[in-house]
Length: 111
Image (cartoon, rainbow, N blue to C red; front, side, top):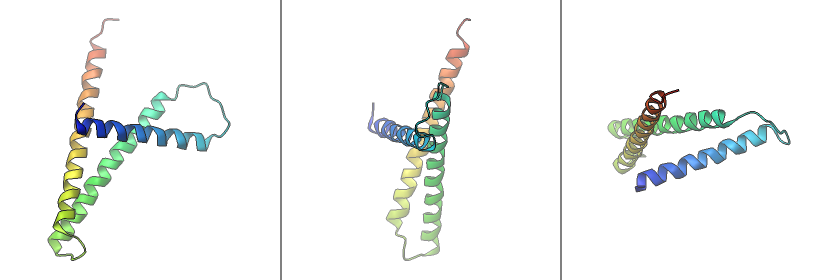
C-alpha cells in the first residue's frame, strides 16, 4: 500500500470511529439487533465526500484571495490547499472506481 493509500485508509478508519462514537452518543445503553453496516458505510462515505468538498471549496477561496491580492493569504497556502484538494479528489475517484469494479464483479456472479 502506498503512502496516499495508507493515509486514506487511516482517515477512513478515523471517520469510522467518529461514526461509531456519534451513534453511541445518540443511543446510550440501547442495544439493537439491526445491521448497521450499511448505515455506517453510508455515513462514512458521506463524511469523506463532504471532507473532499470542503477541501476543494477552501482551495478555491484561498486561490481567489491570492488573485485578489489579500495580504493575509500567501501563495504557498493556496498551493498547498490546492494540492490537498487534488489528492483528496484523486483518492475519491480511485475509491469510486474500486466500488464500480466490485459492483460489476458481483453482478457478473452466477446466482
